[in-house]
Image 1: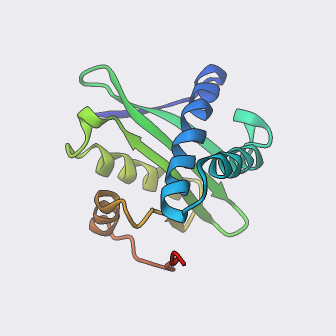
Image 2 (image 1 turned 90 degrees about the vertical axis):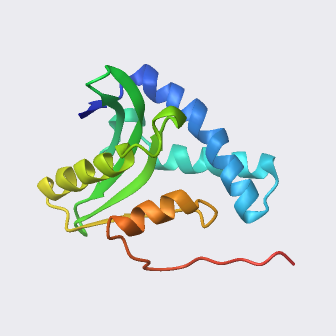
Length: 154
């Protein structure tokens, strides 16, 4: 069984230390930016989204636990926008040892329940085109493509 546990301030700072360079690597490789420029972009994005740190309204960060084995297996970050009744999945991360075991599916199903209880009527996300496993998971769970961003190296 999975359990979602809210981040504390120390976990939030640790997450930023992980997320900023990790996301920058994805930006760099997917959009052909230099790593330095991608790190700047990633830092600006995170500072903008979390303008009040962990207490920023509408942002939710959780550790994902498997209560059967009493182990932290990942991280979930999402937001809700009550003006348009839409939730947005920013990041789901499942530790390598726990991937392809149904955890992602269970977490996303739990997320759907939570955001529906908050009055949201849709759940959106973005996924890098190079992340085939995630694309397949989202499709399996009924997500459809609402836009496609493309680029060409020239």
